[in-house]
Each structure stands twice: as structure tokens, then as C-alpha cells.
Amino acid sequence: MPILPWTILIGFTYTLSALFYASVFGQEFISILASLTGLVVATITAKKGWLLPKTTWKEALRPGFEVKTEKSKMSIGAAWTPYVIVVALLLMTRIIPWLQEFTQTAIDFSWTTIFGVEGVDSAWEFLYSPGTILTFAAVLSVFVHRKSIGTFFSASKDSLMTMRSTAIALVATLAMVHVFTNSGINTEDLISMPQYIAVSMAEHLGFMWMFVAPFLGELGSFITGSATVSTLTFSPIQYSVANQLGLDINTVLAAQTMGAGAGNMICVHNVVAASAVVGLSGKEGDIIRKTLIPAVVYGLMIGLAGFIAIQFFD
Image (cartoon, rainbow, N blue to C red):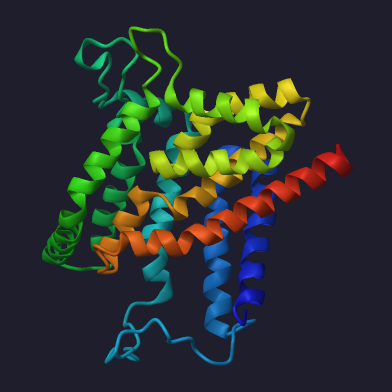
């Protein structure tokens, strides 16, 4: 509870800045610019102690853990440089037409008709990929920070060692995601598993769909590991159900998107990766059990907000 005022401030910062960027630049840049705005405000307010509790919460610290008080020799500007590079490159490759075309076509590792199955494709436009841009920004920051290339390789080695314990689980999870999302391609003309789940839910829960919509989004993220994939998978179904039930389409789709974002906190893929980073490999079950309740509460709040919006503002 003591941290609640600060979290509400950051929440409103993201929401209002997202609305502004959507109106000025379009929806594609919300996740980049609004998140960066929220991070800047969070950094400044945390440094100055605005709306933060007077006492530091230390219940999660391990016995014997000591907080390092030595200040970094790197300036704030230098520390932010990699983020600025990433944002600049992402924006440039998406709003400058000739540069966008070049990065999408220069090096293309896309694989179509995988194993001879029509419709099963994998797109990888190498230079356009956010992963490539992140890697390039990391390499460039070595020179910006005037560090040795050995430092970069040492950090890369540490990262790879951290990922080693999660690689098998992530590969297996991604395999299941692709089977799930491509299950509509079959010899029996059966609908895909996501469609089957959604249609069944609509038939039995259509009368309370505004409360179901966010949980469908959460389910998609939980299974696929991506809010984007969840939205791409379930949005057509949400659209169809909203039309059938006479509900406001924008409100239902908003509930889907928000639910998909909330689903990231219980996604096996993300939990496995995050656990490895903080040294909690093997504790994924405990983490999901603890994040499941906030995910459910969040979904209910989204459903209630959507219900109120439809009842009083439609």
C-alpha cells in the first residue's frame, strides 16, 4: 500500500502519454514512446523520492545481502545512450520509407512453406528485426562508453550462461506455441484450437462477455508467451463475438489488448526467462502461483471497466 501513490502516478503517466502519442504519431509507436516516457518519469521521481514510502521494503532480500552504496562513475546521459540509440533506430527504420524498405529487403531469412506445409511460414527480415537493432545498439554503446571490446564479450558470455538453463524450456514452449497457433492447418478442416476455445466460450458465456474478453486475452498470452500473438490470434474472434452480441467493438478489443498485456505476468515463457535472470530457476511454479491472483484481479477490473463503459457511455 505505501507504494500505491507512486505506482498510480506512473500508470497515469503511461496512459496519458500513450493517448498523446497515438493521436500524434499513430498506434505503432505507443509501446516505444509511452514506455520510455513512463521510464523517465519513474527514474526522476524515484531519485527525488516523490510519493515513495519513507522506509525501504526489504522483506524479499536474502539473508546476508548487502546493498552497494558506491555510486556509478558513468553519467546518467551515458547510461541512457543505448536506450536512445534503440529508440532512434526503431523509429528511423519504421517512419523513413526508403530506410524501411532497405532493412526489410536487404537481408531476408524468411522461411515460407516450412516442411512443405502451405501456410506455415516464418518471417525474419534480419535488419528490420528489433533483435538486430538491440544487438547493434549494444555493440555501438561499447564505443560510446569507451569500453574495451573485451568488456562486451565478457558481458555477452555472462548473458549466454544465464540463458543456458532456460534454453530448453523456451524452445519447447515456442514449439507448442507454433503448434497451437497453426492448428487450423489440418487435413480434417477442423478449426484451430484458439478458435475452438473462443467459440465455445462465446456460446456458453456470451451473456457476460465483457468479463470474459480480458481473460481470453490473458489465456492467449499465457499459452503463446506474447501479448502481440495473443491479440493477433484472438482479435478476429473478439470482433466476431462483439458483432454477434451487439457489443461495442472497440471496447471489446480494448479488453482483449489489456488482458493480453496482463497475461504476460503468468506466461510460462516470460517467467522462465525472468527467473533465470534473477537466479530463481526452478521456482517458476511458485512465481506463477503468486502472480496468478493479481492477473485474475486485473482481468476482473478490466471487465468491470468495459461493462461500465458499455452501459453508460455507449
